[in-house]
Image 1 (spheres, rainbow, N blue to C red):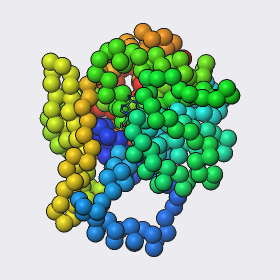
Image 2: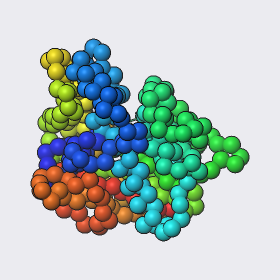
Image 3: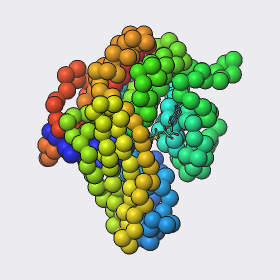
Length: 315
Ligand SMILES: C[S@@+](CC[C@H](N)C(=O)[O-])C[C@H]1O[C@@H](n2cnc3c(N)ncnc32)[C@H](O)[C@@H]1O
């Protein structure tokens, strides 16, 4: 069970263990065959000049349905039958997970935190069509995830807080990661859980490009540009290539620290989380190089070339 890829195949930013092509995607809004035909035509006309980088990012990287199913499973592991209602998405970007969360139950509420208003505005416009009452049950904070969250006196605290796509790797110093996890812990409901994804394995730090087709001649390129062993700094980027030969180079660029699972677990316990568990992706029965999209509780893991997992911390 190994893969060169830094990301799940139809998902997440960096995930090295690929999801099978058939793994869950957003299906809440089924498309008619006419819509599909139109979409294909549009895709074929897409090029580096007219493409929408957020649309392509979501297509390549996000799987909100699968992500929401996973956080529900993790919550059930800790809290049994209790139904989680309030969700906080850190580094929310286009807030696709919040939209999916709200679409799954009318009682549910969500909030998203991000420093950058641009992806938030994009997400408001494009992602909340799947929610019957739009953005009514949603609150955004354009702020730092390390800060206190401004809520009204009756403001609910999150049953689940999630940080997806390794976004917490933006904190390069241990003190910043500590401050972030401390803020999450303080803000969570008393029986809340914190979920974040992670990837690792020897290939995770190899300087290489991973190319994946998004269909209709469009390619997603995950570029592990540079890894500095002395500092842990990890430069990565996303490019998109099109049918007409054009390329949207550096559609997204990241300067991160590559954190290992054990470092993260240590910090989570240090700030006061009560229990930390690890969940690793299973292997595709038809192709042992690929992941199967299912994450199961596993304290040990398997030493693949590249692996994907979740860390879940309970308050
Ligand atoms: C890699 S994107 C991830 C977006 C989304 N979580 C996803 O899975 O697609 C990282 C996001 O984190 C935001 N960000 C970076 N540092 C932040 C911080 N300290 N506080 C809040 N947001 C931050 C960026 O603006 C960006 O939108």
